[in-house]
Image (cartoon, rainbow, N blue to C red; front, side, top):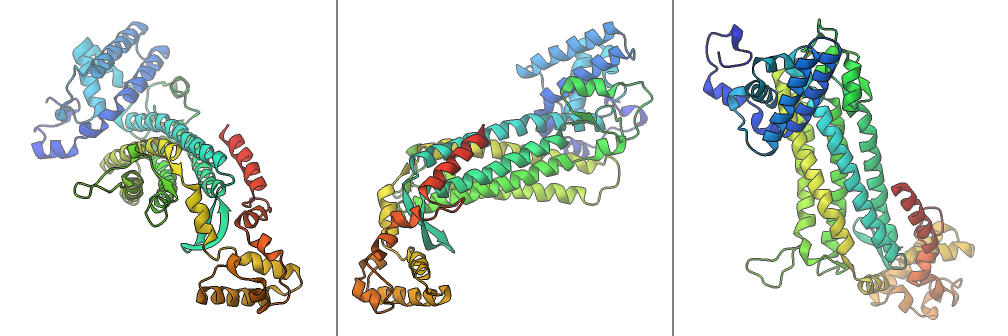
Length: 457
């Protein structure tokens, strides 16, 4: 039989089965990690005397030669060899002869593939954390320039109260900070070594699993061999954190789409992050944030897909687990691509402060401050709330905003109003007066920026 595991079989694998069960067309992404893990395994086999030092050197040199040929595109993967592990082992045997068959001593593809995925996810989680920091820095850059820029803050997508644009942006900084912390914490579960667990029960060879873990930079060794080969929690945890991160990216993207519309005109995205229409020459479409919104769905789908694969599996390894990789790869690539576009898109966007100021001067978002004004003069809040509601209705009926009303008009509703009401209602004062911790006053926003910079360090 041509298969490396074919000794027990009397028939060739059905070609359709071979095509459907092979994973080489996607798990070839693990080539670097597979060879890295194999070299560490060989070092341990030689150190423990399971193979001789000379054999270990020849296998290591062979693996390095195979690695170089893979990087240069000189080797062709075969579906007949099923996966990245068997393909590399076959390449090694072709490179150094039958000695290459000793590489697999004391391990199984079950612990091997789990190790590869731990190594892959560790590397890419660290990359994603770095990319999140880039987006946070872009947010800080824009926020630093726009502490004094005022726009309407919204609830229910209705104008609510004026806020500093920096304050609005920094809300996303803290969302991203929690995302980053989740990813950092997830590395505790990623950074464990399954290698040496064998197929499920360990091995009769005197392996030194800790040596392999140390060489690969893992913090610990799985204490249970069955758990080691069947655990995919670390991928689920990464995908969960990735889904929350993509949700935050989608929320920010939605705001960028809205703000750049003709109806809002609060920002303009750089041309390099927009596209045009094939038929309408005037169009400038915010395609990048729209695409980021949509990509959230595929990340959610990857998480739900893997949860569904794993939900009914008995211990230990099952072929179902082959379906764990494509979703992981796709989530990693989606996050890296999304974050890579988001940071420069935020950095280069033009903020139209004048349009924001105009918007906040032509609404009733300062109404709450009238209520606070009356409360400070002794009126119960619930009564003040009713008074202001009537004032707003009066303004709407007479096509006037709150700053347009005369003092005489205010006196129709309460004699407590004095000339200082106009100072209270100025958007700058409305923002400036929100001095509570975490509020939108300029001083509080500057304090928040200091905290954000410290968090980013």
